[in-house]
Image 1 (cartoon, helix red, strand yellow):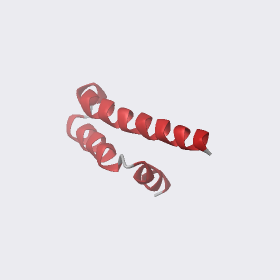
Image 2 (cartoon, helix red, strand yellow):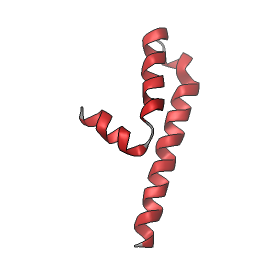
Image 3 (spheres, helix red, strand yellow):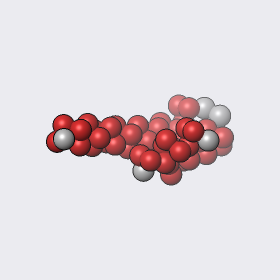
Image 4 (spheres, helix red, strand yellow):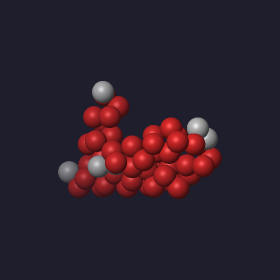
Amino acid sequence: DLVENAIKKTGCLELHYNVQECMADHKDWRKCQDDVKKFRRCMTDYHISQAKKSIKK
């Protein structure tokens, strides 16, 4: 799966799975906000680190 492979490269795949599992359990994204926030923070941190790497080049 392309999306899964892309997320795997970020190091955030486990957090992505946590969001999916929460959504499957609760069927309501509002009940999954802690998991969503952790995943979003991980992705943001990844993008910031990538931007810093490209600036150093």
